[in-house]
Image 1 (cartoon, one colour):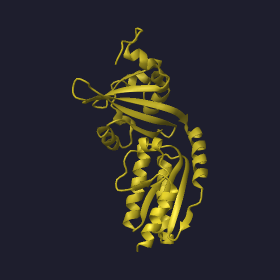
Image 2 (image 1 turned 180 degrees about the vertical axis):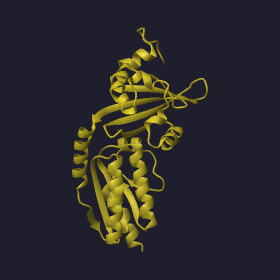
Image 3 (image 1 turned 90 degrees about the horizontal axis):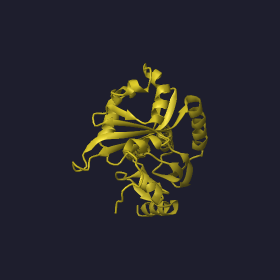
Image 4 (image 1 turned 30 degrees about the horizontal axis):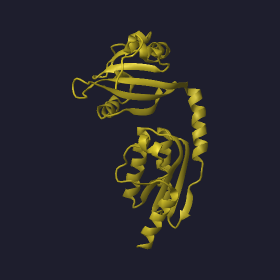
Length: 253
């Protein structure tokens, strides 16, 4: 049951009280409003796009902020609940971005616009330090756990760049060692977004082309909610169950 808010507060007041950068765009991806936190942050970012202040961004289309706007439009056109990713801003800054469609209750959930939230905005130097940490985490060796079977236990954060490294590293290993099974463990991952799901799906598709089966293990209930659905990829809750599956397939040959 919904109850009236016991204080006099508007929607914009609520958004202004949030300490994150919030930008509102209409259904054509034109920026129409930003909260006070975003105004401060965007005023510092505006010169990177040849603008004087955050106010100059009002009325601009979000396409101007993307190298490949058609790819971003495709993602936003398919949004149902939201999209999260790590973005690079003019090779100067990096930030987590969360895009949520704004739907109309009067028109059967039709998308009327988008709320864009920028979080954890950091400089390139700070991002490079994080990247070094990621590289160290990726240095965990590929484990040969069974005949023609390798496992890759991923730990820490799994962003887009690291996902790309996983794809290339695993493919090279499989070709070199004539691997037949790859088991990727996500039990040590503490953050996951749509772009990583796409990378793992890409890895599965590439491995399938060279005759290698890929399974994913270590998916907790919490992680399952953020991952969403994989297409045709077998997933298991733990490594033991995944290995039993591989051994059963081998014994049946």
